[in-house]
Length: 265
Image (cartoon, rainbow, N blue to C red):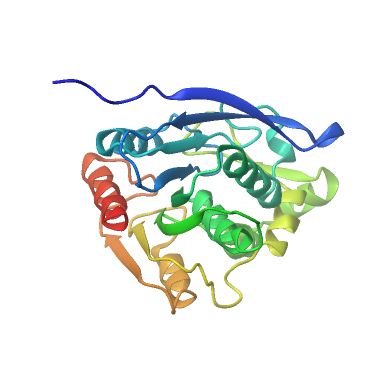
């Protein structure tokens, strides 16, 4: 039996100019089966394109013969730029630049945590981009739209507010890394300008939300709130009673694979 899977190509693109220029690392898998939508991975805060779910999405694309795109935001993984310079607008600009560079015709966005927020903003922005790809659907895994204003700002301590004022950032321990999470004043202020949960979200495509009910970072009620803002779209919400934030267990990966394949049918 001949393996028709084509090798993933690694490349870099430059986004921005002068002092704002940064090098973005991209992994692109070419299609072997025509007319299938391209799967596009949008990672979470401080995650990268070699994480479990990103790799599993790429493996699914390979098994189906579909093309797939993964990339690291600036300040993440193999990309350049300082993490502390990152904002939703900056990372959204990079997602748009990657799609503009590769030029897929049809896409399915797969966004994890913060990547779910960027997926929703990308759906909004693509309507204004000439020759943008057609958005066939999106799978959002523990999506965290508006997390800066909805999940961080209301719970800031006085010390954290003081650090934002004095230093421009504050730190907190991370459950997923020995390095602390860093949240900057620019990230929080820019987050307010990118809010999506302040009106109806017209993505123009079907979607599937996967949300753990034992998620310590994004409460499952946040997913219910998101559903309320997607009333005109064909959106399915799957609540996983014992699911955590990562949703990377074998059974969670199967849910992700099934959700993606249902949108490709």
